[in-house]
Image (cartoon, rainbow, N blue to C red; front, side, top):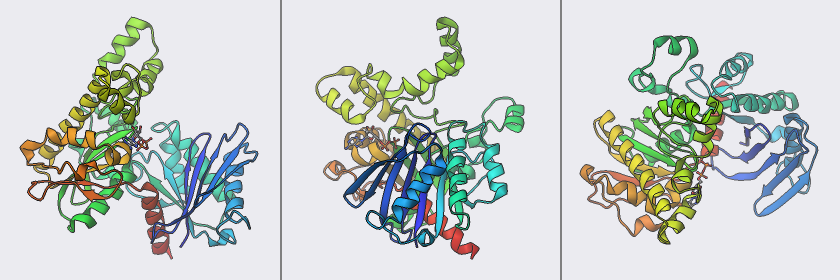
Length: 397
Ligand code: ADP
């Protein structure tokens, strides 16, 4: 089976052609500068092709993607008929979507309804969907939502303690993001530990970071909120903060709320804590090892906040069996993993320092006598999208 995975942004569109059973990617690429001029970056194995192709809209980007996939020299399939289905990443499913679904007119209407919750991403995601429908009208299309995995949270986790009218009238609540990654890691971890019923905390630590409490495969709570600004500090996002800070900064410096939110989204996090040294954890590690105190504080604060949430979620689930690390930092940065686990001795967490040195591989890093299994599970959001898409399309036949 061939699934085309599409991740459409406002001026870019990423694609992968994947076999959902094996996870093998036959080709992948990126259309960039959509609406400006247009450039296609295509990759088959180690072979990279870059072509300037006019892309006034997402339709031309999809057309260019399909053309290169069937190209006699650079392509990997003979005809677009060999694409069995398309899986689209969609940011915000609001309260409309609890799972991935086959796209029809009602689904499009519901994704449009969620635009106020994802004003930057949902319109771009819709452009990708509509462009695909136009050029491949008979191929099934599936929407996979970043928020869907978290929809099993109970009200005590997703409701904010603010007047009910904002929840009822405006759907203001915790949604959570990175759901496709959390779902993939939860499923894969169940395979790795060989059981379905267990309590885990997953730490998706990258440039954007979020954590989830998962019991028996279902999300119980997550750190991001109405938007991806909440939770632990991130590369450039502040994470949780007293909302009155916004009022203070606006009053004192004459910022608009949008300007203030821009600071919290783009100029905060470990970038700010490190006195603008970097948002990249590798630079912070180098900085800290050279004696830069701000870089060291940024990493320390990050580990501290992640560990605090592990404690909170352990309390929320009345226990923890497995702790998992994923995404750029979680998979590669042994220092952060060790820094988090240092706080968790009281839970009986023990990691093997030698195993923890490994980078980017699926691996149990806890010692045999650790009370909690600690795993590094590299995420694979594309595989999750391909598998969800394939499952839905097969079930509909
Ligand atoms: P995004 O949220 O953009 O998907 P990623 O999950 O790709 O982010 O994570 C990116 C971050 O991962 C980088 O900013 C970097 O700090 C970190 N990272 C990537 N590789 C390594 C590495 N080898 N060692 C330490 N940190 C790494």
